[in-house]
Every structure is written in structure tokens, then in C-alpha cells.
Image (cartoon, rainbow, N blue to C red; front, side, top):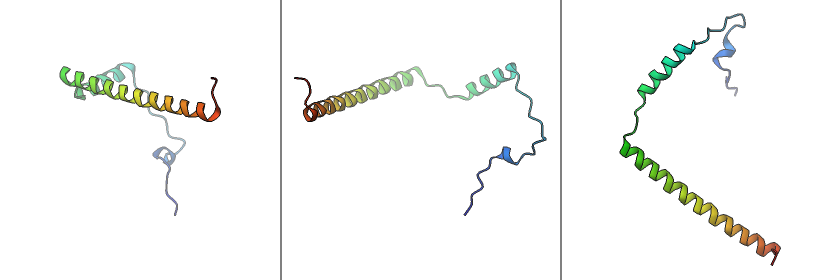
Length: 83
């Protein structure tokens, strides 16, 4: 069973012209328009999100450090580290 995976650009005839490039001014206006649609967090939400991220990162650092120490100890016991 074949699946058609070609994109829309594959269907266009090769003689078709490329669309004009966007001017820098229009590009900037589009960026500003998109940023106005964003729901920005309040200061309280931002602080709580930051604390959550920092706690998560600290937990992950602890887990990775613990596993590193565990694997290091295991390798040294198996292969006989410098004593």
C-alpha cells in the first residue's frame, strides 16, 4: 500500500515564479502582531514557574550525580581502580 508523501511544492509546475520576499518592515510588523497574541505570565506566575524549573533541575542534577557516582564505584570495583 503506497502512501503519497509528496509535499505541496512537489505538485507545482517548475515554470512557476517564486513568491516575493517579505520586506524587513513587514516582517517586523508581523513579529509585533504575533507577540501581541501571546498571553504573557504575570510576575507571580513567572516566579513560581522559575522556582519549579530550578527545583526540577536540582533534582535532575542530584539523580545524574548519584548515578554517576554509583556507576563509577561499580566500574572501579569490577576493573580494580588505582588504590
